Image (cartoon, rainbow, N blue to C red; front, side, top):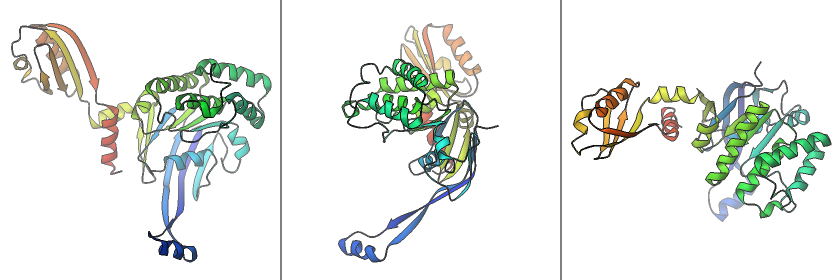
Amino acid sequence: MPQIEISGLYKTFKVARRSAGLKQAAKSLFCRKYDKVEALKDVSFTVDTGEIVGYIGPNGAGKSTTIKTMSGILVPDRGQCVIMGRIPWKERIDHVRSIGVVFGQRTQLWWDVPVIDSYELLRDIYRIPNRDYSNNLDLLISTLELQNIINTPVRQLSLGQRMRCELAASLLHNPKILFLDEPTIGLDAESKIAIRQFIKTINREKNVTVILTTHDMSDIEALANRILLIGRGRILYDGNLDDLRSRFSNQKTININFRGNGFPIDNTIVGIPGVNIVSCSQEKLILRVDGNGSALADVISRLSNIVDIVDVSIESQPIDELILKLYREYAV
């Protein structure tokens, strides 16, 4: 049985509308006009226990609305949302004991007090037994390297430090599901790698299900084993990265470093099916290869007969380009 079951979810917001100017502002006090925005339109999907799902889409597509519905913050207009056998907005107290939520641009930590004080307050809110709290806290402090910042007021932390503390706060009560909304936004490379590694660790060791929304496609590539694309309030794609690569392109870029005599290497490559030369110099050849590995094997075989190959590296098409093609296909 799936851990998360979403079926036919709809959510519409009413947004106030008025023209610019003081006169229009005064008029709107007595006669306000509204536009209806359909944030979710028949959204349906399931998630099994232990999955890491990348939930992607452009701004305004409905990602955060879905996360807030699944966490019990929003109530949909209609449709079903059952998570671990519960309806989030109807059984919210029991539901929040089983989930953790991190919003990259919001905080659940108290701004002017040390981080540890926020954790102790969360312990009381979630009614975590002292032994469980102590064990979880020790594990999170060591894994996320919080030893030197745990007694620092939140307002004095860098963004990367605060996000590590936010992750720890969301996991103090041992949730079964972790919702992450832009968890690495604005972080430097070192902080991103640390957070990604931690997410993989808790998923592997504690079987925590992770729903990740982000615009950073390197997060998706590093973490997600499945992608859900939402656009204009609808689920447009559900699959994994390998399926996505085979759907749009099995093209690879080959970098070959060699020692040679300076003769025109490109003449040796011309005519091999599916092979296109990107650039060629006396020491390096860059190729674009379509199809399976037979074309690459043919290239290597021909070159090895005439030059000393020093190094070969193979690069798949960047994930950002694949996602962009997906956006264009569905016009989102």
